[in-house]
Picture 1 (spheres, one colour):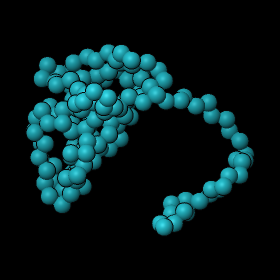
Picture 2 (cartoon, rainbow, N blue to C red):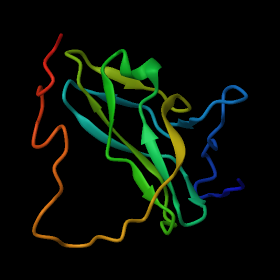
Picture 3 (cartoon, rainbow, N blue to C red):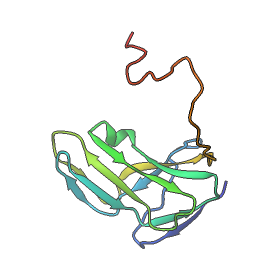
Picture 4 (cartoon, rainbow, N blue to C red):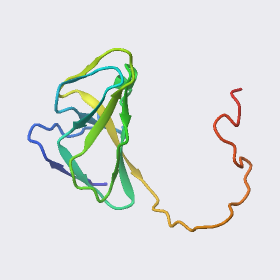
Length: 140
């Protein structure tokens, strides 16, 4: 699959796959920023993508930053979006964390998606799970 990419900031480092067969493209910070505990920040990454309908670009955590307490928020890009991509990070740790310019801050995965045709109804069929919510299957 070919995806068009447009550099929207001359300092942007375009996303890269680290290894053959990887599904996530590494995304790099354009700025240096220290996030205090529980602080949120939106990092613009300087590029936009164009891909076919029926796909979505999803921003996900990098394991290297998630293990220190950083987590991505939101991050669903539709096929029709043509603006600059960004990564919304939150520091869930109890210590400040510094992101350096050029550092990997997230990954983007391109997923095929189904565009649903919703049909309103008054009833839903029975299932083995029914209305079982969080914890309905127990822990052991």
